[in-house]
Every structure is written in structure tokens, then in C-alpha cells.
Image (cartoon, rainbow, N blue to C red):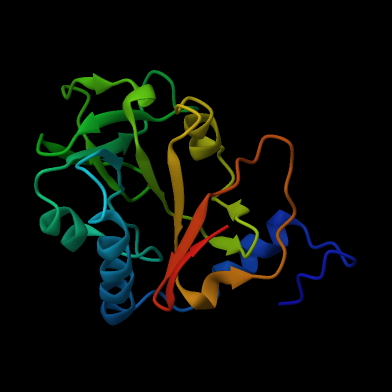
Length: 187
């Protein structure tokens, strides 16, 4: 898809395009996990937000298992405020959300996002300048504004979902790095 900034493409058109792309393979996801592991293992244990993957996202379960001393958090779409994500410690009970993802139940204690050191962010597409195209609900955009200013924001995707340009609106929070099966790239 042409994503030349001189020829604007709407986010809706990009989402439609992204829905036609193949899903990441287990081999792609394993390479993404390897790159993330190499990047993160150089650090002291930290608090990391990850996600429970939908079918078009890289499954990061193996990364969590490879860094067991770290504090891992999962996002939840709260029933009483579907416009924002809450964060919960990994290890509690999960439930299936009507949108198709697994998430912590509402019984899991909420963790303040200010404690997050690294967030691994899924997306439908990413641009090479760190712009993320999500599903259009703004959940992650609102969550990213609640992190401390030095939190590392890593977009997780595959090469086929990288674009030269995605329109960035004022509320879009760019990633500080992108990781794909080809490697880890600071933005």
C-alpha cells in the first residue's frame, strides 16, 4: 500500500488494508521474542506491560517465560469504563472478552501505570517513525499518556505490517522502538 505522506491515506483505509495481511507465523513471533529478550535481558528486572495476543498479533508468551524475575502486567478493558485500559499483574485468573482477547478478570488488583518501565504495544500497522495504527478505540493512546515520561514504548509487529507513513494525530503517542522478526530498531 502506498503510504507516501504527500498522498494521504486515511486510517480507516489502512485498517482495511491491514485486515488483508497474513497473520504472524509462530516462527515470526519466535524471532520477535528473541529480539525482545536480547534487548530486555541487558536491563535490571523491570515492570513490563505485555498483552495476550489476538490472531493478527505476535504471541509474546515465551518472552514472559524467559524473564521470570520481572513483573509482568496485562491490560484489561474495564466493564465500567470501556474507553480505558487498566493494568493487572500476570498470574491471576483470565476471562474471554467479547472483542476476542483474553484479559485479567475484574477481581485482579489494578496496578498504577506510573510504575511501568516498558510497554510492549501491539498494533495493526506501524510506521518506521514509530507511529502506531491501532484498532481505532484509543485504548493504548490513553494508557500511554499515563506512563512516566521515561517508560520505553516498544511497538511489536512483523515486517509485513511496517509502513513508510501512517497519519499521526495529536493524540497518537509514538513508540520509542519497533521490533519485528528482522530486529529491534530504536525510533
